[in-house]
Length: 449
Image (cartoon, rainbow, N blue to C red):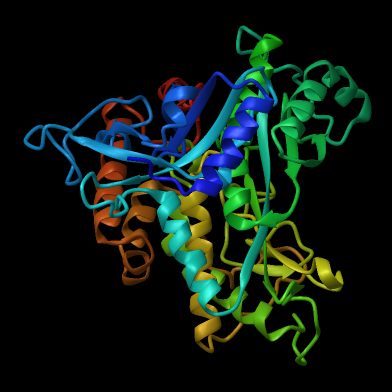
C-alpha cells in the first residue's frame, strides 16, 4: 500500500519523467551526521512503500563498528526500521544524470511511530512547537572544510585567507561544486579561501530551517562527491591539523511571523533592541554547556576549541563579534539574526538545530537575564565561563532535564553510552592529550565525517 497522497505522487512522478530519473538515493542520517540509506530503482520508489533498514544504523560508531547499546543489541537481533521518504525534500541530482535524492524519516514497523533516535524527527518536533506559537524558523549554515589531493596532502600549505588568486587555483573544481549544488536546488551565496591549509568556507542561502538542514546534509555529500571527480579529497573533520584552523558550522537563525522577520523591529531599550531576539538569545546562552556534546561530537572537536582561533571557547555573546559564542547581527533590519558559532562542521545538523530551537524556545517562555555582551577581547577576561576541553566533561553536562525534554530519554541514554565508549576507545589506543591530532582520530574521522 502506498504511503503517499496522490498530489505528492503526481509531482514526483512528473519530475522523474521530465528528468529521466532511473534511481533515487533515499537518505537517512545516522547519529554521527553521516548520510546512510539505499539506492532504489525509480519504478520501485514510485510504489511509495519506502524501505527497510537495520536500526543499528543509529547506534554504531563512525566506522560502522557494531556494539551492544541500550538501543539495540544481540538479544534484539538488530531488527529493521521503516524509512519513509519525505517528498518535500525530493530533489533532482545536479551532479549526475538520471538520479534524484530524498530525505527519509524512520518509523517503527507496524505502528509508524517515529524512531526515538532519528534526529530529523527531533528537529520536526521543535519546529512544530514554534509553528504552534505562530512562528516559522529560518536559518542558514556556513560550513568550513579542508581539500586535499589524492594523497591526502593539503591543496596548499600556506595561510592565504580570502585570497582571490588562491581561490582561482581552485576554480576548476569549485565551479563544478557550486553548479552541482545550484542544479540540485541548493543556492550558494558565497565561497572563499579560509584560514587553514587547503581550507574553504561555503555559505548557503537563508531559508526555512528544515529545508536548510536537509540542504546541509546534501551539501556535504555533494561537495565530497563532486570534488572526488576531480581527484580531490574532502573532510569536514573538526580539527585535522592541531596548529591550524579547524572546521566550524555557523548557524544563522531568526524567527518569522506573518511573513516578516520577528527580530527586525526595535521594540525595547536594550542593547539587542528586540525583545524576542533578546529572549531567544538568553536561551541559547543558558543551555549551551548542555548542548556542547551535540555541537562537538568527536574527540578531535575539543582540540578545535582554542583561544584566538575564531572557534569560541566561552559562553559569550556580542554585537558583530567573531570571538564569541553567539554573534548578534542587529541594525540589519529584515536581515537581523543570531549566529551560533559553537558547532563543529562534523556535527549532526539536525541535532544541533533541534538543540538551538529548544534552547531558544525556553528563552522565549521565560524571563532569563541577558548576560553582559563582550566588548573587546573575551579571552583576556576571566568573567566568562569556559567550555570544557574534553569530551568526558561534555558528556556529563549533556545528561540533563533540558536535553531529555529536547531529545527524549531514549536518545540521551544511548548518546551518552555511545560517547563514553568513544572516549574509552580513544584512551584505549594510548591517547589522552589535547596537544596532538592522533593517527587514530585521522583514520576514524577524516574520510567519513
